[in-house]
Length: 410
Image (cartoon, rainbow, N blue to C red; front, side, top):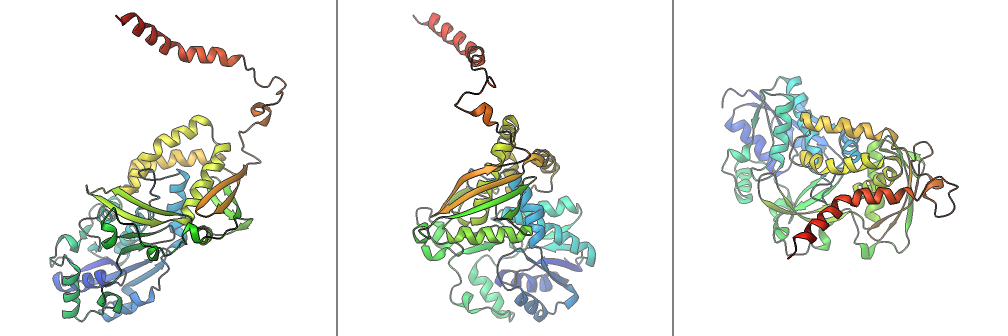
């Protein structure tokens, strides 16, 4: 262990990573560099700096960075260009944050001349896979220290006892039993796991939800939005142009107000187990609905169907930690190519948990031709007689099979 002289730790300032910081100092006798990312989790991050200083971390080795814009612009938006959902429901709020954290861990490691990186992901979860696959992809020879796979502090009681022995500050929340849930938050979502939710038959308590009101408590009056897209990315809400992270934050506010974006899901983890989690993704739910609406008039039919075919594979790559893989890059190139024509606006109605499309248009790229689609006289734009031959040709194989089956009957 002594060969590790300096390690970069993904540090939240909470109980787990504070214990890890001290454990690294004791077990590896190394210098620790802390990295704390602001991804829009809505928490004060300066306490992490104060705690790191209490552990003797040099001020120049405490990195607290605002990554909100990069997170939404370079990770969330590219993912939503593919209309990405995992297992039909999950909008990948936790998964998509991990590649960016891995990227910065590696960059800081290079900048400070560290020998290794470390994280607080448990040996049961997906995040250990996502952090480490990303790190190996970006720095193949990097050393990774995963304390949850090495130490014997495998319960909350053992962590608390370790913290008490080493004078690690424990806030009142942990002393009183802590939150009944394990939570992860960023600008795209907030997730809840553990304790009460470990019984998949138990309904989530209303008091658990943080970002959204219940649909029953949402306003009785609908609210209309107009979202503007350029090359598949959201650029404005109701005519107001904003930065990427500001746009998502505003959609979160509006969606939460109207009870949009709650999800109770049992998902299949990469490590082999089923896991129940509850998620709030109000802005992402609105964005996905609007993006599909603008694509409906700007994408060629077969291109749209090809995207839908590829989306589950793309979603699995993100969920399983392969953001930095060559196959994800290849898929992204194809997806981004399809988005050149995805320009225009979508009008939405938000009402009691629902996102309802009420209109869409693209002045430059719409493939919707009213002279062809009309039920009125189309002046010869479409010859309906052509459909007869098309139908007979496509029915030929089924007619042959039916005749064969008829001949085989006794």
